[in-house]
Length: 310
Image (cartoon, rainbow, N blue to C red; front, top):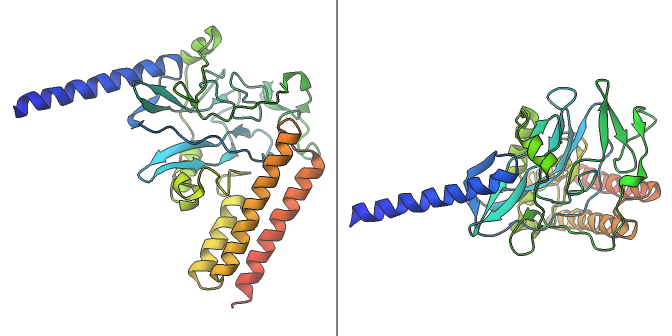
């Protein structure tokens, strides 16, 4: 009887792995077979893209990863590609065989299939329209990317790639109830067979750091992460949460003060969401300045609250 049960267990495991492998056939073929979840990830949050910090950096959208405590948000961030000429294909969750499996992102000469998930900022569900490589230098399309043109001059404007729609999907997975229904195109399948590069060590560190911050977990933020994006790995937004945490741990911020700044962060995110939805998914320059002003105000209050207890 024990032997029969063992054999059945092997068959079940084999069928699960086979189902997940089939899911990968239209993607990067780099699915983490060991990660299979019966509950789908939360919807994608709406957030502001921070400005590109350095010429040559590319935007990698935020996504939901999965850990021992459930889904957690990995903030969108600007990173350096492994080498010039490479583009980022975002990872995504796919549904098949009753479970959700994660298809890992990768670098390659062309953008492959990422489940039809609309990550925004040039990743509208198929391909990438945020810019292109020109002679070893990346040219940014400022119609969809947040780039300070007084600092970075290799830019252009192509508004024809913007698709205005009153209904924007925030689905974070492909297939299954509530997911996208996209299927890989011939071009995306061709990109799948090209030589790929794994996420950089900086990206791996970024995901690991996100997994250590409890505020990133959906069980804590209810699908609305306080720090959905940052300019560089380990910079600003995450540091702001650390300042709050450090202030609480050291006794320099009272529970009331902590609740106040956390509420301000939530207010900023809600304001950003409303402004973006009212302007076709993109903030105006005036709105960006207002958001930065409020974030600076919150940072100052954190500093003053901690200073007052010293």
